[in-house]
Length: 161
Image (tube, rainbow, N blue to C red):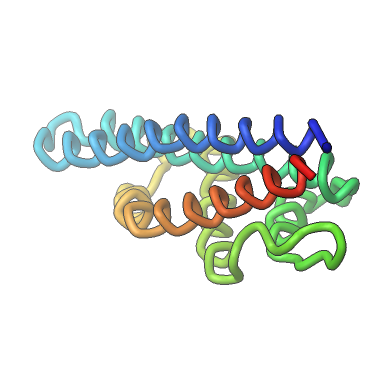
């Protein structure tokens, strides 16, 4: 039995519950921005912060997978991108890919956007980009959620052996 795999599977499921709440909050903020044009910038700031937190939650999961399962966390200056790309790797005798290439490609923009949120003033956010990312998250979230749940299932199966 590999207890750390069972714990990690539970953490993935827990993190996904939190991410789902963030996705809903981002959607609510976008809807409020469209409804209340005078305060749209404030609601878009909220949407942007929730997008930031969605990716940060995913990255926490990726770091745990890399550390516990892969035994290797990237350390290069672009480690955030390398970590995301590591989740697409098929590691024979270790693990299957965590996410599909399509999910990785789509999540890369959320990684880049998180960098923007961390490094510019909120009044510099591009409201069109924020709105597009929130809207696209509606179709992306179920895909990466299913992929991560399938990976959690894998961990539970291997961890229980």
